Length: 79
Figure 1 (cartoon, rainbow, N blue to C red):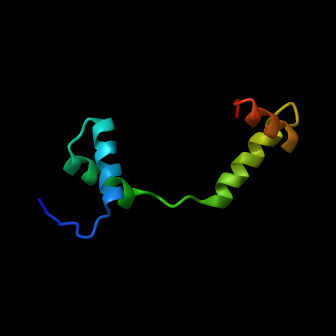
Figure 2 (spheres, one colour):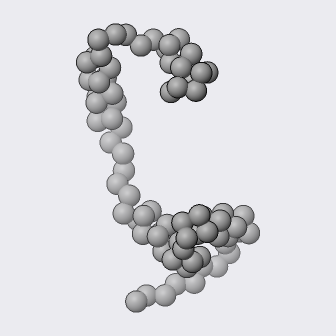
Figure 3 (cartoon, rainbow, N blue to C red):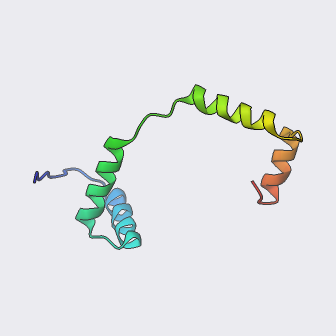
């Protein structure tokens, strides 16, 4: 097992991590490990692929959704 020391962590970051640990029912140390492991395992998003899939989905719909429709949905809390 490897041990690290984090120096210079802001009070705000410490409090946010502590709150997050409480939310997840973890110790501060366990939460810090979970955040670090999640961060280094993240895969970059392939933007073009996401856009292509969104376009395919939009084109598969039997109705057209306009920007005005999306705005209305958001204002009503349905998007």
